[in-house]
Length: 419
Image 1 (cartoon, rainbow, N blue to C red):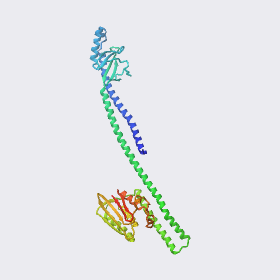
Image 2: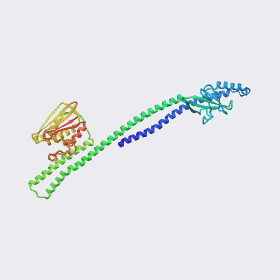
Image 3: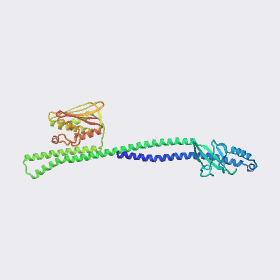
Image 4: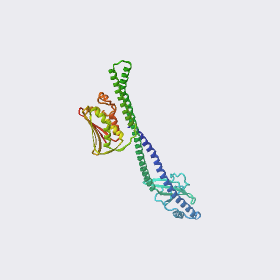
């Protein structure tokens, strides 16, 4: 797995680990608050029942009654003051003397309430699928008794579970959205970094190739110039040496110009796009290349359909000039070059065809590499640098197009730039 994907995974795990306790705490706080509210409500009812029972209780009358009367009096007063949901508990035996709840009270010795004097203190007891909220309070009249409140709060726990499900859904949605955002941001950042690294690597390769490519003509120029300085040569030999120096110097000039142009494109040179008619572009390019074609005695023709395309005119001129230059270098006197612009199947195509020497099939996949030359001796003789097609590929990419090259040795080459 790539490092950036592992980083995203780690960030998502960290996010999930942060969300789980936050969600659990939110559910706990919500549930605790709901139970406290219920305990306060039922606690007030318990406190009111206690106050009424103590208010209406008459100890003097109670002491004069028989056991049967005492029992009846206690039951009457308890039902009158406390009502449903409560039970009167004997402190000594922990037995229910009066039980107005829906449940059998076995004993409350292990109720475990932290503060028996606080009417709002409570304990939750699970009974099958039901949840009961238990509270108790001690009576001062009659002495030796507690009032126990038993209230069902199953509905609160059902709501709490539903709240937990909602929280889980919300947190999962947050997790997924955040995860997607982190993934997209990381992917975009990494893609930009990889693109920058790729450009840097290409520039490094170009500079290495340039250094290698310049070594031969420089060695030749230095060698011939040293010979002219230190060796007495005949006029004819001097002319050949000077001619060689001149030719290699021009090749270096062309090489450095193309190199600067290509590096400028890799450095995201400012592109100025504008709608330009194909006919205007071709006419301009043909005018530029006409003189060179006449010198080589090569016929330069053009055909175009009337359409316009959004382009940087200077870059597109450079692309077509490079293609025509390559065609001129590959075509001997008496040959021809046809430059075309047309539309087909919704695509705009610029095409340069020549009747030159052609390119072997095994070389077609390499000719767009910088400094690659099929016939090095012929290319150097013609002043070639091996950068023309590399420039064309980059210009086409900038305009959203690509190069397609077809060639047959001895029959010629056709290069199409498809947009």
